[in-house]
Length: 57
Image 1: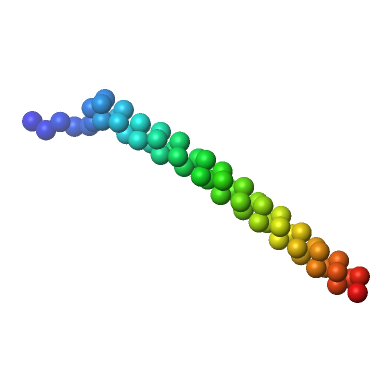
Image 2: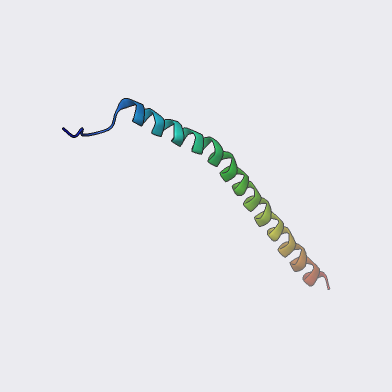
């Protein structure tokens, strides 16, 4: 007779794997977002600096 569904142990293993992946992925994602915000801010500063230099000539 074939069993239908998953055992409790299999479900717990899947939950643990998902937990470990999220523990690793969340800090990496936050770091990526912070780097993106810094790059956007630097681009905005450089653009405003070039505009003000052009205006002051």
